[in-house]
Structures are given as structure tokens and as C-alpha cells.
Amino acid sequence: MEDGLVSIITSSYNSEQYIARLIESVIAQTYTNWELLITDDCSTDNSRDVIMEYVNKDKRIKLFIQDKNVGAGITRNESIKHAKGRYIAFCDDDDWWLPEKLQVQLDYMAKNNISVCYSSYYTCDEEANVTGIVVAFKRISYRHMLLDDSIGFLTCIYDTKTIGKVYMPSLRRRQDWAYKIELLKRAKEAHGLLQPLAFYSIRKGSLSHNKFSLVKFNLRVYKEVLGYSAVRAWLVFLFAFFPCYVLKKLRLRIINM
Figure 1 (cartoon, helix red, strand yellow):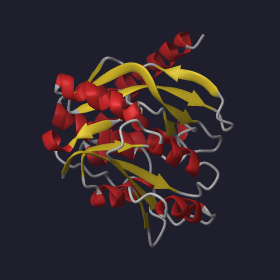
Figure 2 (cartoon, one colour; figure 1 turned 90 degrees about the horizontal axis):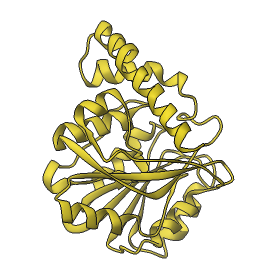
Figure 3 (tube, one colour; figure 1 turned 90 degrees about the vertical axis):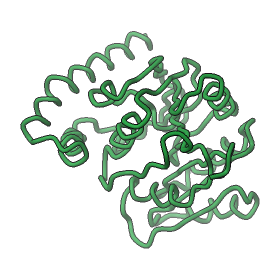
Figure 4 (cartoon, helix red, strand yellow; figure 1 turned 180 degrees about the vertical axis):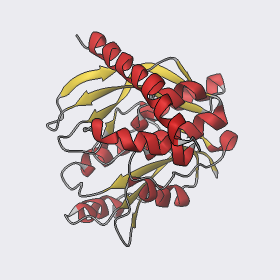
């Protein structure tokens, strides 16, 4: 792994309308020692053509193409497999970063000897209008992550030198939460920055937009990734995860009033 290099992991699927925005936000980073590894999950639009225009202009940008549609988790793993950086960061195809994102987080990690870092971020609608802010907790432990997914994946960055390179489980949904659970299992805790450093796009009809449809995938994380029995998975979800989720929503509503 190249010390100081940041490998940015992106899964792309039918993203021709917004992938350029993400790429431009990476190119605009004040920290320039990065590689952007985009894996396309068999898009049926012109996503790959848009990405290739940037690949041909900037050698730090690389495109990999899946043979068949396999979902975001396995698609991200293809990019992770090719990652050469000491640090690994994530940004989905419809999200984007502020220019100082990497520099601020890397400075904080180096100064405080941090293995996993995240930050606050803005939420946006489909027209890129800011609709709110998600304020990061100062610290999140492994136990906290088991009960509440409180790290915006688009802000997450970790140090492979201290916790190793981590791959995603092959779940179609909630694989990002399962991934962060594994990161926290290794690092014990993650540290957050109050400064918002990214923009999270909420699109109607997206997988993450329909929270109720994700219930069964939350249970699958508990059962298939953590090895809980079906009874234990339901008990933890109903009496721990769900109350934490409700409290988190109330907190965000108060913050964004």
C-alpha cells in the first residue's frame, strides 16, 4: 500500500446524469494524492462513456466493469481489490464532496492517531438543493454501530495500515452498515468531525430512500453477518435498533427545524 495515497471507492449504476459531479468534486480536492476507482455494475445508459472521458484525461481515475449486475457491495469490492492506497474512502455515484474533505480528515487522523474517521454532511434533493444537515456524533463505538448506523458512508475514511483492508459482505442492501460494523470491530471506535464535508443525494425510489423495505435486510445483517439467531435478531431490532433509529430521526428533525 502506498503511504499517503487515498483510494476512493465508487460503485456506478446508470449514473450518467450525476457521475460527472462526483468526479469533478474529487478532482477539486485540495489533497491531490488520491486514486478514484469506479466499478460499473452493468449500466444500461451512457455512464461508462462519461466516466471514460475523465479516465482519458486523468490517470488517477480508473474504471472497472462487471460482467453482470451484482449490486453495490460486490461492485465496491472490485474497486477495493484494486485499491493501492493506505487510506480507503467511499463516495457513491450520486453523492459529492466539498474540496477540503480529504485534507481535513487526513490532518485530523494524523494529529489524533485515528483509524476510522467520518464527518457531518448535507442532504440534498434530486435537483441538488440542500434540504438539511446530518450532524456527526463525536465518537461512535462498535456497540453503538450494532444498534444504529450513525456514520454517513460518503464521509467514511479508514487507515488500512492499522486495521487492514476490509471487504464487503455480499448482501444486496445494508452491506454498507455491515461493513462499518466490521470497521468498528477492528478499530474499536470511530471519530467524527462536526464540519460538514459532503453532500448526500436523496432520490425518490432509491434503495436507501425506502427505509421500511430495509427491515428484512437489517435482520439479515444480524443473522448472516453477526451470526445471531432469528429470535435474537428480532429482539435486538425491535428493542434496541428501532428505538435508536427513532431517537436519531427526532434529533435530526430538531437540528433541522
